Image (cartoon, rainbow, N blue to C red; front, side):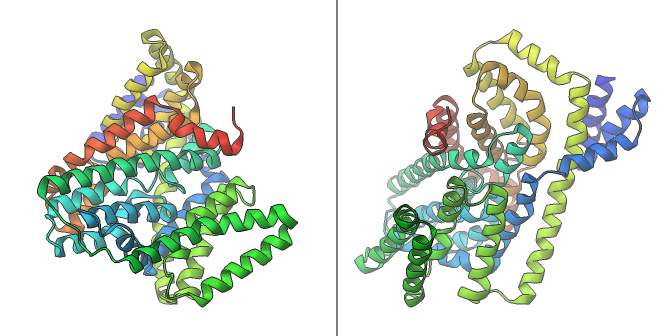
Length: 469
């Protein structure tokens, strides 16, 4: 009967049926063949699978990303990145990566990054003479930063399934995100040196200094709040925030990028100090995006807000349907002891955590080419987590490994959503888009090896902030 469950799932997938329907359908086939379980159990398990407080973060992070894309905030992020690094050799390649780092701190998804900033970046790079292949390749690679740098929608899903602190996962993604950023910028520098590219804008100190001042403001803002709390409690902190807000209001049009790039600082600061949970942080991110679009910049109309809300509802329904279907499928995998058999096989094959992580990387790189990340996590994690626990691998570290593997899968056919988005944006065939992305797998795979086998990259910061063991 276990074979019937897995065989029917694979049969549904081969016929091209969406993965969520394949999971729910194979569960129904198993229950029908065994006759031991009432059919209503499927409905009950699916409903209980999405009856989770952490999952409330899903629609709000999706809404925040959509609002940022539609409120013209992506243009401000791009202009800030251009001023900061556009004067370097291969300037717009560096701008592409830095812009993705900033946008990752608001959207939490690779697809939103590719669709939002990607449209602006590819056009700008083409206008400055870069090849279409290079423009698409660097855009695709930098889009993978979205789910690594907090906030992150895949981390929410992983934290729910693995019963791991989502706040710790968010913090754990900061240093790996910086590692990815550095390796990608080194790759741009290599291509710039190889092709003898120059800068795309002149080094003008007033423009660079303005961008640096904006960075200083972003970093100083949470320090002012924490200093106010330490000096006199919440009232002093409120006064400090008010003074900073007045300063920003006075210089509103000079420092246009400060408030958008402050988003990840506010989210991480709020979660690490206990002001709000990650789920409440998702609500805060959406409110912040609404304030920027409707009140501060006034680039978001009510008509646009209705359209963005409908897009968010559609995307949320898709994600939650996958979660619901995976919950009944995962429950049956556990009930039929598939997870126990896989764990016993793995532990009989190797007792080394490093060998196990190598096998997991190979598995997830393969699975990520065929399954959407949410579905891949929900199917694989119930099988892999028992072995992770028995081998003593830190679940926060394992979460970074899982998410990065599946983000690389987004760049590959036949199911790579970032691949499809960029092929449409750049008006290229899937074959050309795939070939354009291939060189950028090198920094991504090097990052994967470092993050997999140097756990301190992921665990140093959460241990420092959360005093975790």
